[in-house]
Length: 168
Image (cartoon, rainbow, N blue to C red; front, side, top):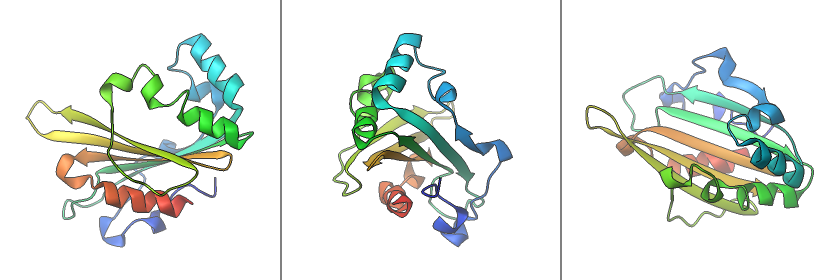
């Protein structure tokens, strides 16, 4: 839990805040796999040794800066570093039913023991392009994730990479 981002990790002028008290919580194993098919979810828990996780989501409090509208920070603890690596490889985005929505980002991160970044593009009814930019990394027996959401022009991968480094 000590790896999770805090408001102090963000630029003060972004005025990031918790929009809802429920956006800062523990993530049990049951919650982590509730959207997975039953067998796949159980295989994930058994093979990775997932113990628990935490997440928090911040909302930008100004329209003056070109930074993500929302930023999620997620940390998951596994019994072993091998389990954390399995969570990002065998059970990672590219091997899940959501893989068709995400594109692997062409980035050269120097972050943790293993890392990957993904982009999901969403076109709103008014024609604006929003993106979700996810960075995942393993560090010993932990998996960290930073997710930025907002207009494409506001979600800078470098901004999110800096936040991910602060988690280490």
